[in-house]
Image (cartoon, rainbow over all chains, first blue to last red; front, side, top):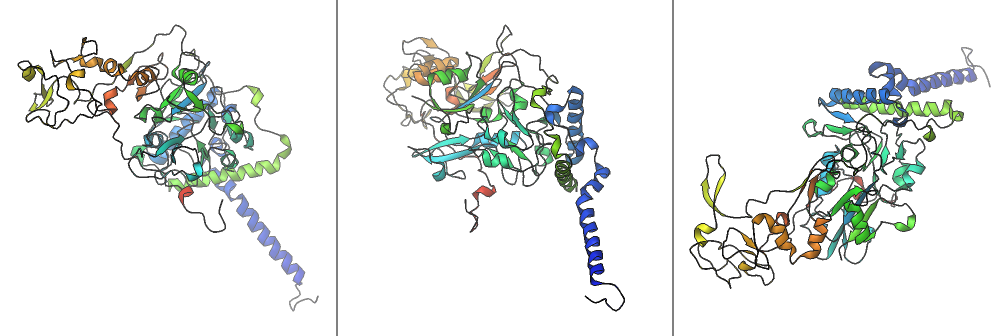
Length: 304
Length: 221
């Protein structure tokens, strides 16, 4: 190798170029950290995991979310973090004999849980399938004709709140877990959006926020829960949480209230006098994909 | 603009997470499930489970639809603007009950659009020929329109049984009656008593997400 005319070797030149590029790349990589100081509190930057928050920390976190939402949307919301009720394990049962496939449940979920309007997202998918078999591959979810069709049956599918939940065990950061009342929840501030849980769920019950959900300010449901329907950021997973901001206050879930036929039965599995226990004891009940051993808290049944 | 800040914050946190993984990979999990530190206690956590001796709130019937019940619509309104109904007896009191009539289709003045499609029932199977402002059970007991659930349940036993156990018929309110009341639909909210087969409806809009787009070649699942 020969020196160039002005005495700078090719090696030196490459070194310099490499160093410059490297520094630029490094600066680029650290750019998020540089922007940190501008509009963010340290709590926002590295929020504490929900389960590690003490009462005081939780209060602060709830207030921060309320203020954040006010700043971003102009809406006054009330965010709560209801704890599981001791002695309660939630169960849900759905009567396939009287479900008419009207999607009122999915619509109610959409509105209750501040879902993205553009995709018409909902935690519930209602499958229309031929009578005689449960074949999801042949089912449709985007039917638009009047219901019920005489040769079809309808099967709403949402999170089955499994006791042996594959989505929980695959999460690399413990951003999703099963609460004492059986509800599988997501900490939106801890989820890194790897979507392992989406792949692991055999019920296709998890949704990924490819974009931050867009909800017109006047349609935002202000009754929100930390682990449920508060506005989700882009890049995190979400799922049905049995409307825990309602059900942990004793209320029925939104999808059940919307069901015109009464196909949905919700209640406390530990209360022998509950409606859900009557259904389990008296109806022909099955769980979806029982062979996978997920042990759902969601049951389907038929009349007679 | 607020939106884009939101996004970049999220990106920041994920980036920070990646950095944290790199820096402290050997520190192990940041969350100890056995630690037992939970968010419990912020709201009504201390409340006992349903049951115990707590007072239970009532389960009420949702009011009947305006078309169902004693009286027939007129085109008059009262001083509040509410429609005035004429009691059935104002016409029927002076008329002998028509025991064999099964439909209103051939009637000329009232009930002329009323088409019966309810098995082989006649008007007087449920309506009380001695007082049209009430109903009658199969054993000829006179009951008010409020008792129509009992009336329907005479033939539709399994449905009534399921209704009584909360697995047929819509409801709103509280699953835990120690915390609040519940309101139940009645049969007639969904089933027209004169033609009870469910007529169907147009469903709410379906999803519009990417799972409904055809797979791109080479990206099939």
